[in-house]
Image 1 (cartoon, helix red, strand yellow):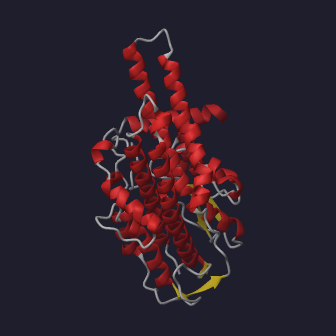
Image 2 (cartoon, rainbow, N blue to C red):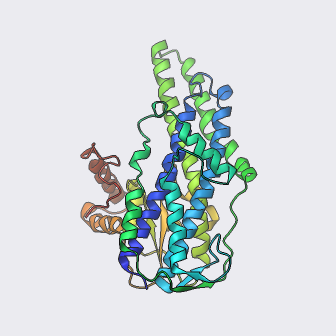
Length: 373
């Protein structure tokens, strides 16, 4: 039923759309962070904390819808069976065309961000759309640019390779997709976490700097501003990761309960850290293995700040490895030749860093939405 080209195109679109959601979350978080005083973060961070919670709530809803619709489509393409009744479907009579449209529509919603007008009926997502559209780009540090996370070209790529079997009926296997955290639960989990991990350390660092007898006033101000910038980056990364965790948690649960899944790999963004790229280089070697990101017991700790990885899953024995994974798999033995253990990972880190340094004009270092050949 499926072609490798369609599966891989859908995979790339899913990853790119999730990355755009992460970028949008970071965009708002960084813009709002500018209202937090470097000299008095404890008393000026309330707006940032509250808005960050609202961003997390909205991103979790969008990420989960996107991830579930992608899983349901890819499973149907490879097996002729999907998992659970698709959202919005009136009954269990589902066609491949409906699954394709469901996934594309969710990807299109992400591609349209920020929309010039509100589109969603969900008040949390509507607030997020309005907030994103109202951000002044001049208030956002250049490290986050929404234009670097394009989705539209990948939607067209998928349309170009879709099969002509949209009327094919798909069997629906019983499955209750897990409910995500409520808005109240998100607040309970992340509000204190953001204050304790981002705001309080910044305040403590500022206090220590101001009391240092070894620093001049100008040095104190410079270092406080530097700490403020670094805290904003960490905070925005925490917000985006917390949002994507809903999509990751949903597919993690599905993988653990889906007896038809045969292979799982680490799927990364176009610009992963060295450790995630190393995991991706191993290919389809994971099944219910924590290092691939498919252990549902501790999803938050599994993905680091700014991490945009998602599990890649397959239901056939002979599956084509995504181009980025294949690239890393090819490079690993070359880069780490003569090394082992920690030394091998350090050599890999140096290689990743050098690739980015040698390609300063690329928005994501050496890698972008077009995987390397």
